[in-house]
View 1 (cartoon, rainbow, N blue to C red):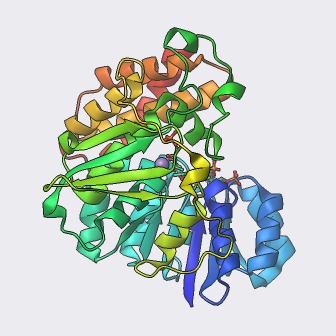
View 2: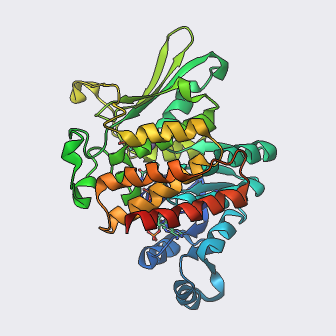
Length: 381
Ligand SMILES: NC(=O)C1=CN([C@@H]2O[C@H](COP(=O)(O)OP(=O)(O)OC[C@H]3O[C@@H](n4cnc5c(N)ncnc54)[C@H](OP(=O)(O)O)[C@@H]3O)[C@@H](O)[C@H]2O)C=CC1
Ligand SMILES: CC(=O)[C@@H](O)[C@H](O)COP(=O)(O)O
Ligand SMILES: [Mn+2]
């Protein structure tokens, strides 16, 4: 029985992780849950999964839940609560919170020597160097949950990284993939949230529409697989059937395919190196799909993708600034405080103003994150 702690239990990846656990009750048991503000859903999850410890965002919600559950469950709260869940007694941590708030819990779980299912890509964008170094030091595996990275890990199975010539990440193009740059002027939040292939949380759906999501995934792939940026490519593929590809030095290309369903990579991360049956399965019939389409990305149209490549290559503190500026600007777009195109303008401005720091430690990263958010607020308001 694998004991699972889950960060972000009320979100898109969190609820799908619980779906996987429901499919295999003999294999998995939830020991800890962490959520934000959705207390009604957390209550239902407590009733169904009987965790030993639960974290919520506010002290008030924690008090209410503690009064309801008495001594049966320990209720913690806030950022410290998330870190406590990551350090709790378990065999596997699924990190499915959104944003750089996932960084410190990831580092705590590594110290706790548990394998980590890493959905929270912002952790690696912000401080991939710290995370990978610490994971190596403590012998902890970071198992990719992101569909592209799960695909790459599957394409690498049984082969040597030394023989890889290129990683090719597929990209749907997001909600505005058929728009020209001038069409993006004044697009609404509602339209931006309408992803053609995937149902996901709001923040990643906006990242997908700007293609910052793909830029983040390039950085994520660099850290997870140790491949330099000049050998990581992005390929537009609007059907999201091929989840990514690996080219080997003999020019053979291995791809992983499947219908867009995040429960498949979630389950693979949780059972790796085994593959379990997927009882909810719907087979991929390529004849039903008909045709698959491919296009190279236009870096002028998708400027965020270029910004991410540049920040990744520059390294040091640039990833933290890229992520924090983007998080702040996306939150403001979702709140109706700025236009869609202002997201990338704010990120570009934050990156150009920042004095790059070579080997930032955790405090330096957290300071860069905080200062960048403050700076973006002044840029937009
Ligand atoms: N969704 C997807 O298909 C994919 C997601 N990812 C990555 O996975 C991560 C999660 O994405 P997704 O599931 O879509 O995001 P969601 O927005 O759907 O979920 C975010 C989760 O984090 C919780 N949360 C928010 N604020 C806080 C806080 N202050 N303290 C503690 N918990 C908090 C939310 O709780 P609450 O709702 O209770 O407030 C919710 O449980 C992201 O990094 C994303 O990039 C990667 C690939 C695919
Ligand atoms: C499901 C998943 O992994 C998302 O990150 C997805 O990749 C978003 O799609 P695009 O960024 O390709 O639009
Ligand atoms: Mn992805």
